Length: 97
View 1: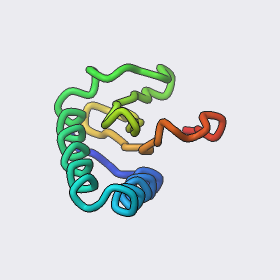
View 2 (view 1 turned 90 degrees about the horizontal axis):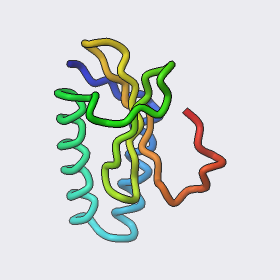
View 3 (view 1 turned 60 degrees about the horizontal axis):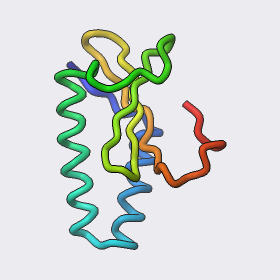
View 4 (view 1 turned 90 degrees about the vertical axis):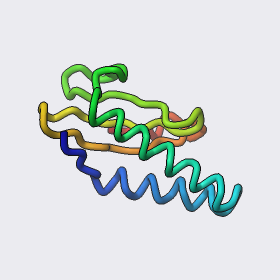
């Protein structure tokens, strides 16, 4: 299965990494990136284990760490789009997919 990073996913991942580097240091940022790699591998092999949040658009939610959730779309049996890395402490009124 092929995973496609949307510009939004790349941008929000980078924003979260910058925050972790500034506030917690390189070690914590590196651990987070390692966790992202593990989660993406799991999504590639078995995306259905994560709950659907939008059945019509096939959008699923994966908690990477308790502070950050990854939203992704299963497009076909061959493609998955990573949509965004949402910081769970942000105001939910600004959340849009």
